[in-house]
Length: 433
Image (cartoon, one colour):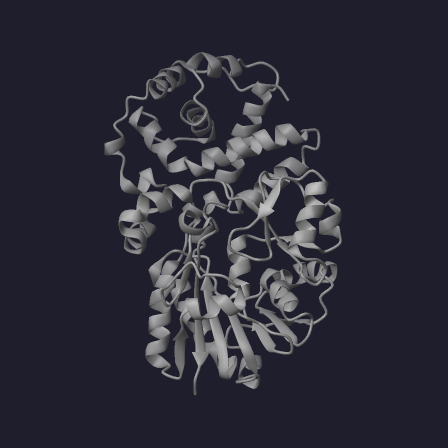
């Protein structure tokens, strides 16, 4: 692709993402699948530019508004990103927008005017609202301030950077040292993850589906934070374990491997489609102790029949996903019923906790950074359930993961700034009676 045609494709793709209710990664994948002629380098550059626009969408819109562009569209957002994100000049952008074959239309007089204003960079950063400065939707600002206080700038900035590509070693097939050596021998730049003992971090994003280690089931793509959630369950061989909101089964696979394929893992979810997507992963990972279970809803009759039968209950609750915004920057701007999610989380925790036997544990987790989805939910649950107690994270970590716990509080909170992972909240509750 020429630089001009690459810009034209970026404008088209930004428009497709912004105008779609589907997640950005789904839209981008479909866009590229329909254009097989785009080479790997062009795909990488195109994707990086589109995600650059999405990560700065609020700031770009605000700056455009300061220049008189009241309703930014895909073209104005992308051109603004060329100026503010890639530091291209008016002349460079004008050269790309020459109206030639596959190139964007020439700059209008109005566009040339505001592109020049952006390039002059005369905006007062202090005039930028907090929500705009940190790319936060209005409904999340108060919660982020409550969660982080003076650390908000550092945490919000970390959420704007691209997430690394982490792999999880399947200990049923290999160990981390062997997997690391094999990946290095194949020329991949990899290193151990700092916190997870079964994690590997790639220094650059690469397609892995054709790699022999992936095909053999030795490694699986999974963020380090997600690995730690599953490891904090502290599942042991022979246990009865339920992954109550299993989705496609990523955490179920960690549980099964930790149990050495001995015992029982019930992967439960209300979506049969999500569970079906996990079947190939289970087969490739050589796991034979996972039982998929489709639930009608969080209070399915199966829960009542299985009351008090499980040693471990993992609840990876549906949430705002605010801890994963660096991975899904478009998700910030999608309509979210926060009150509805909080109510659903309460119902799930209330119902799924019945599955834990006396002495068993319930592990409640979200990929959210909002206190109302995390600490407040546990406080609400404990107020009605004195038969449960909080097991401090530092008490669980040495046995479940090894080494020193990164938190000395009752709960474990992971964030991109503090731990280099997606944002996660983890609370471990023990049924004492």
